[in-house]
Length: 491
Ligand code: GAP
Image 1 (cartoon, helix red, strand yellow):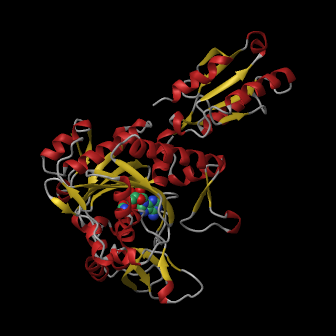
Image 2 (cartoon, rainbow, N blue to C red; image 1 turned 45 degrees about the horizontal axis):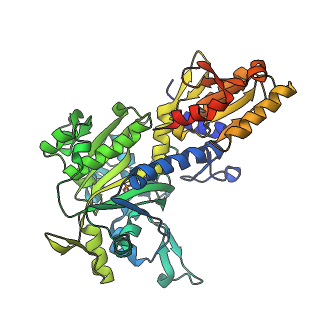
C-alpha cells in the first residue's frame, strides 16, 4: 500500500514526526513543526549530508550565515528584481493562485514553458475566469518575506528573510577564501533555513513557506572536472531539455554518455552523480530518481544551465535537488555592488572571478520526505506499518524490552541493559503492553533493533535481538550488543 501525501502527513502526525505548526490555533498554511521523532531523523539527515559533502572532502568547507543580512545583498543578487512567480489574482473574491500550477492542473498547459506574456495570452485566449466569476489579473509576485530592522518601520530599515542560503556564501566569499586558503576547485557549503512567501504552499513538507536548505557553491576556473571518473559510469534516468521539447521519455544512460552527448558539463554531471550516490547510500532506489534539465524558460535569473534531481513521489516526479551552473553571475554582481574584489588566483590565468560550475542545492525537508516515503510500507502479515529507514537515519537505533512487565527481575535487568546502551546510541525503553504490540510500535517508527530480556537472560546474560526488516531473532551476549549494533550502523 502506497500512502498518498495526505495519508502520509496523518501518519507523520500520529507517530510524532511532524505536526502542523501551532495546531491548537488552527495551524498556518505552509508551516510545519518537527516532532520528537521527526527532529531526530531531520538532524541525522543534516549530519550525514554535512559529513558526506563537507567533512569527508578536502575541497569543501562550511559556513553558517545569517537569516537576515544587509539588504544590499538581495539587490545585488537580483532577488529584489527577479525572484518572482506569476500570480493570478481575482479582482472580485481576491483569491490568489500560482499561474503555472493552476494552468497545468486545469488546462494541461506545460508549467515549465510559462512566462508573464504567455500566461496573459492563455488567460485571454481561453477566457479563463475565477470560479467566483471574477476576472484574473496576471502579475509577478516577489516571494521574499519583508521585515524591518530596528525601531523604525520605514524604507531605510526594510530587509528580507533569506530565500536561499547561497547568497551568504557569495557575500562572505572574500573572508572564507582568505581564511581557509582555498584554491580552485573548491566548494563552500551551508545548511540553514530559507523563507519563501509561496503563493500556494502544498503537498505537506514539499512546498512550504519556511524550510531548510543544504547547499554548496562549487567554484572552479577550469571546465574539466578532475573527479569525474568517480561517477562517470553511474547510470540513471535522464531527461535533457532537447528530449522534453520532442515530448520524449527519460533515457537510462551513464553520466559519461550524457556528457559525450553534449547534454551537460562534466561538473554538472559530477555533482548529479555524487548527489544521487548520497541518496542511494541511505537506501533510496535509483529507479525512483531521475535527472531532468530545465527548459530555457524555467531557469532562474542567475543560471546558465540547471538540472533537477527528481524523486517519484505519489504526486508525481518532483524536484528534490536543483543543480545549477551559476557561472560568474553572483560574484560579478557582488563585486559591482560592493566595490570589493571577489577573485581567486589561478596559476595559468592570473586573478579572476571563479565560476560556480555547480550549485547542488538540496531541500532538507524534501530529502526527509524522500527517505520516509522510500522506507514506509504497510506489512500485511504483521498488520502494521514498517518504516524500513536506513538505521543511520532512524530516530532510535535500538529498543529494550523486558519480556514481561510485571516481573520485577526482568524489568530491572532490562533497565541495566538500557542504561548500558543509551550512551552509545539513541535507545528506547518500553515495558508496556504485549511484546507483539511493542515490536509493532518500534516497526512503525523505524527502530532497526529490538532487544528482549527474558528468563534465560537471568541465567546466562544473553538476550534476543530482533531485526526490524526480517523479524528474525538472534541470541547474543549482552556484552556483544553494542559492537553488534555499531557494526550495522557502519556505512
Ligand atoms: N540556491 C538555489 C536555489 O534556491 P531552488 O531550486 O529554488 O534553488 C533548492 O531551491 C531546493 O530547495 C529545491 O530543490 C527544493 O528541494 C528546496 N525548496 C525550494 N523551495 C521549497 C519550498 N517552498 N519548500 C520546501 N523546499 C523547497
